[in-house]
Length: 79
Image (cartoon, rainbow, N blue to C red; front, side):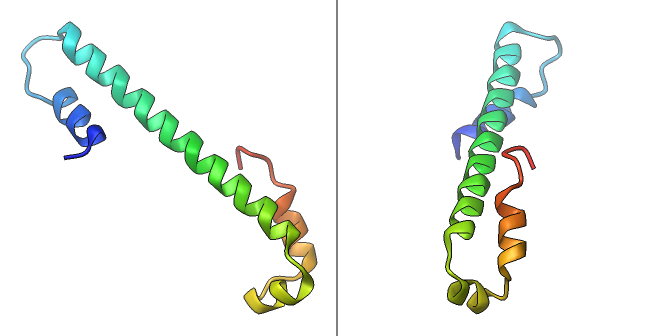
């Protein structure tokens, strides 16, 4: 079981009352999800920059023209 799965299992446990441990588990789960999203956005951003650096021959091979590559490369980190 992964760390995220175990955190989610603790957070969803059938506990009759709200406890400090459950609150910590919920917070830890939110932090893990947030970090995963940031890492994904960073990877997409890195991929877009690499796309902009490809030459025309490689862009043709993958079916993208220079204008589309430039458009993708100028998108922000958040998009």
